[in-house]
Length: 442
Image 1 (spheres, rainbow, N blue to C red):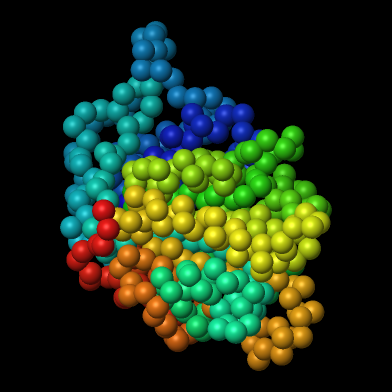
Image 2: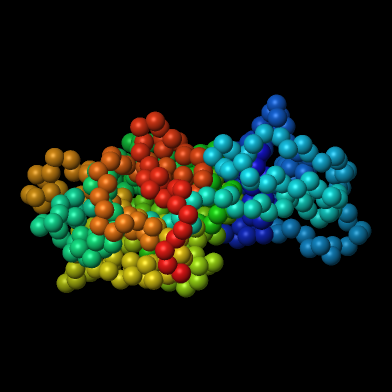
C-alpha cells in the first residue's frame, strides 16, 4: 500500500496547488477514477492501515471542496469543528511495498495521535531507497538524421556528437526506435506503453490519447519512491507566449499543426497521462527549458531524473529553424555543443550522473536524403551514454529500444520496470553501473 499512501499525500498537497490552473477541468473530471483506485484498495483482501483509511475517506467525502479551495489553516475557529477519526491501533507491517525496492526500506511509522480536525494526517516521509551509484540521470531526446549521419566515422553531420562527445562515452550501436514519430517513442520511454495508431499520428485529438489514471509513468514511480524528476521542454509557453508549465491542448481540442519551430505537446509525453495531470505532478515538474541552467547550479537542486526536450529546430527536425541559420542535424549538433558542457560541469553530474543522448524520432525529411534512404533499417539511430563511471570510448552492440531506456532507468533507481519495459527480451544497460561502490569526481 506504499503507492496508495503516496497518492493520498499527493492528493492532499494538490488541494493547495491546483486552484486556478487551466487544466483544473481534467482534475475534476478524473478524480472519480482516482477515487475508484482508493476504494478498490480499501476493499482488497490485504486492506489498508487506519491512517491511510482515514485519509482516503476524507478524500472521497470532501473531494469537491478539496479541488475548489486550499486546506483550512491550523488556526481555524473551534466553532466549526470537523469530525476526526477515533484513534485506532497501529497497523501491522503488512506486505512488502514492492519487490524492486530494497528490503531495508522502513515501514511508515504508526500514528501516535488522532488526526487534527482540519485535514487528515499523512504518513511521515520515508527514506530514499538505497540504490546504485547513479543518482542523477539526464536524458536528451533529439530527431535522428540516420545512424551514419549521426555517428558514422566518415559521413557524420554531427561532428561534436560523433567526435568530442563520442570519445567521452559509450556508444549503443544497435539502439532502435519503435516508430518514426516522436510521441510513441517518448511515451514508451516514460510509460512502457506500446505505439498505437493515435500516437503514431501524433494524437490529433488530444483527449483520445490521454492514458487513464491507473497507467503509471516513470515520473509516478520516482515520486512514490521519494526521488525527484523534472522535464525541461524548450519553447513551452502559454497562449500569450509566456513561459509556462505543463502546456497541453484543452480537453476535447483538436490539435492544429504548430508553426515551424514552435512548441508541440508531442515532444512532451508527460502531458498525456492522467496520473500526472490530475494531482499536480505535471504542473509542478514539467517546466520550460529556461529553468534547467538554474537547477544545475547545485546538486541538491538538480532532479534525480531530468528529461530534456529541445525545440523542433534544436532537436534536429529539418525546416524548423529560422531561414539562414543551421538546420537539421547541424542545428542539433550546435545545440548539444552548448547544452552538454553545462550538464557535464554541474555538481550533480560530476558526483553521480549519467547523460543519455538519445534519438526519440526519425526526422521525416531525412528520408529524402539518398544516403539515409539506403540504410537497411531507418529506425536504427544509436544512442550515447556519458558518465564518470563509464570507461570512455566504449561500444555496446546489444539490441536496445525506448523500452530499454525505461527499464534501465528504473533499475538504476531500484524500481520495477513498467509495462512493456518489463518484457523478457528487453535489454537493460543498468548492469554497467549497479554494484559499483565509488563515483569519480567531486
